[in-house]
Length: 501
Image 1 (cartoon, rainbow, N blue to C red):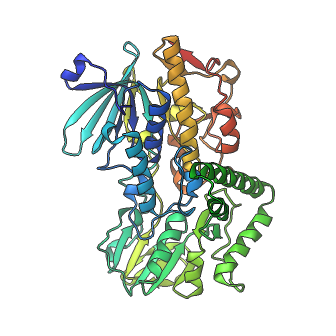
Image 2 (cartoon, rainbow, N blue to C red):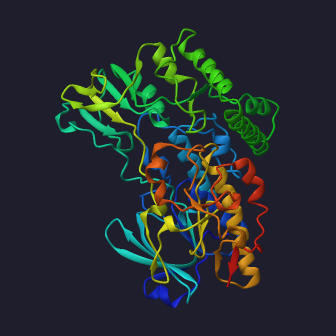
C-alpha cells in the first residue's frame, strides 16, 4: 500500500499541494498517527510536515549525555510495534525503533522535512485548511487539506526555558542548557553544577559523573525518584519459553499499565506509604544510612509532578560513590567562580548545565484563523483535550504525564480514523465540536487542576491553553489513561457535541 495517495488537483500545478490530511510533526506522535492512518483509513492521502531536518522530535532535539526515556518502552512504544529491549531505553534505541516504524509503513516518502508550519487558515466555504510552510532555505509553500492532525508536541524545541539569572556575564566558566547541548564541551575533571532535579537532571548527572571531577545537583525543590533494575523479568521469562514477541509486548504492556494504575491510585490514597516505599528503593543504591532531608524530601505528594525513573539507581550509585552531591537552595546570582546562593554559600563551577525545563508551545506557535478570525486557544473549550470549540476538522495529540505519552497517541489515532471514516460514510466534510446544552452555564476553568498536575512549565503558561468546562469529564484533559482507554473508544460520534456539515 502506498503511504501517500495524491489526488490530482489543478492547484498542485499552481504550487498548492492537496491532501486529505496534513499531519504536523514527525516525532513519536506524528509517526504513530500516520501509521494508524495508513492502516485504518486506506486510500486517504496525507503528508507529514516536520520543521526539523529529520524524524524523532524530542529524540532528535535532545543530545545531552545519557539521554534516555523516563517511561518504560513497553508503554512508551506503540501498541502495534513490539519493544524487545530493556524497559528504559537510550535516545539512540528509541530513534532506531521509530526508524523501523517509518520504514515498515513507508512513511519517509510521505514526510517533508525542514518544513515549518507558520500559518493555518480554515475556510468554511471550501471545508478546507490552507497550511502555509517555510522551508529552512526560506522558501514558502502552501498545502491544502480537509483535516489537520496536530502532532507537534507541547514544547518549544528551539528555545528552552532558561531563567534570567543575574551575573551570568561575569561567570568565567561555561553555561549551557541541556536542550542546547554542545558535543564539543569538555568537562573532564571539572567542577560541574547541574541546575534542576527533574528527569533531564537525573539523566545527565550520572552520565557526566565518571568523567567530571565532581557534579553538584542544584535544585530549588526536590523531586521524587523511582529506582529499579532496568530489566523486565516477566518479558525475559516469556522469552525463555519461546513466546512470540507480539504476545510478549501485549502481555508486558498490560502488566506495566496495571502497575502504573496502582501507583497512581496509591499516590492519591496513601501518599505517605508510597513515599516510604520510594525511599526503600533509593536506599538499595544509596545505602541504608542515606540522608533524605532536606535534598530528597519533596513538598508535594508523589505524581503531583512527574515521577523521575532512575534505571539501576545510577544517580544514587554516583552519590554513594561521592561523585555527585545535592544542594537545595535558590540562586542569588552568578559570580566569576560559580553560583552564589541565597543562603550565602558559593558553589564553585567550571561548567553549569541548566536542566531547567522547556517553554510550553501551544499548537506549535502557529498562527491559526477560522474564516479570517484569529484563533485564541485560551478562549476555546477543550473536548477531551483533543478537539476545541470553534475550530473545525482539527485534532491535537496531547499525551499523558503520569502514564506514557504514547498511550494517548494510539487512543487518539483510533478516534481520528473512526471519525474520518464516519464522515466519509455519511458524505460530510466538516465536523466541529460544540458544548452540549448541559454545559452552557458551566464555568470555563484552567486546562488542568493545580492539585492534579502542576509542574512549573505547565503552570507558567497555563493561561494560554484551552479551557476545561466545569467538572464535566468529557470537557477536560483528565490525564487518566485508565478511564480514557474505555471512554475514548466508546465515544458516540452521533452525540450532540459533534456538529457535522
